[in-house]
Length: 385
Image 1: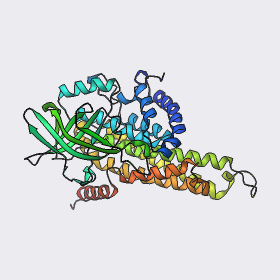
Image 2 (image 1 turned 90 degrees about the vertical axis):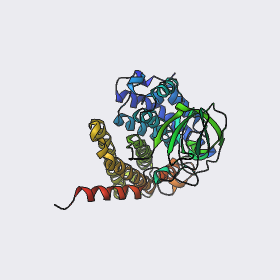
Image 3 (image 1 turned 180 degrees about the horizontal axis):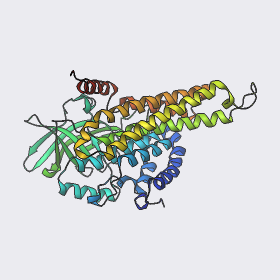
C-alpha cells in the first residue's frame, strides 16, 4: 500500500516517497513506449498515494500545496517517466485553476468531493482546425442552449489522459453569440466518443487521443466560465518545464553512470577521466543548475508575491518555460554525445528521452509568443524619459 502523501509534513518526505515510486515508473517506461500504451499503472499509483488531490484548495479540505512544491514533485515524477508527469501535471493544474477562476461553489464542492476520492480532470481545448488555444483560434466545438440544458457538439484533439478522465473541461463557442465558454462534462454523459488516434513518437504514454462530443447534454451550472477578455495568468503551467527538467535529469544520470563504468581497452580507466567527456559532464551540470535555479526561483517568487501584484509575473513564467525546456534539450544532446552511438540503441533510455524532450517545444506557451511577450514587456519598461 502506497504511503499517503497528504499525511506527510514536509516536501522532502514527499519527494523521497515519489522518488521510490518513480523508480517503478522508470522500469515500466520502455515497455509502455514500445507498445504505445497509456500509463494506467503509473496513474493508479499516483491516485492511490493521494498525489492527485494535493492541489485541492484548503477550503475544500485539500493540501493546497505551493507552486514551488508542485514543480519539485512534478520534476521527480518526470525523472521516472515523462509521459506520466506531463499527464498528471495537466490534471493537477486544472484542479487548482477551477477554484482560482471562481467556478460556481456548488459545482466546485461536487467536483472536489470526487477528486478527493481519486477522480481525474483535464481540459479538452485543442482542435484540429484551430490548433493550440493559446494562438487565439475560436473553437469549432459549439454549445447551444436548448430548454434548460446546454447541448455540446465538437471534436477535440490532444486530450491527454482521455481514456481515464472522469471530467472534461470543454471549450466551446456559444451559438448565436460571440462568446466562448468552458463546460464541465462528466464521463458518464451520453455522447462522448474517444478515438485512440495518439501516434506521436514522443510521450507515447499520455493517451492524448481525439474526443468527440455528439449532442452531449449538460446542466446549466456546468457552464463554468466565460473565456476571453484579459489573459488569465496560469502559473500551474510550470508543470511543463518541470516535466522536461526531470527528463533531462534522468538523461544526465544515465550519461554520467555510463561514463563512470565504460572502460574501452584503448584507454586506462573509464571514459569519465577523459578531458573531453569531463567537459561535457561539467556543461550538463552547469545547464541543469541554471535551469533549476530559474524554475525554482520563479515559482518561489509567485508563492511570495501579493495577489494584486502577481499579474506582473507573466513574462517570468513564460520565460521559465522557454529557458528550461530548451536547456533540457541541450542537456539530453550532451548526454547522448557522451554515450555515443549506444544512445541510439532501442535498449537505451536516452533515445526515448531524446524523443520525449522535443515535445516540450510544442507545449504552451510557444517560444515565439514568449519572445514577443518579452519584447513588449521590455519596450514598455524602458520608455523614454
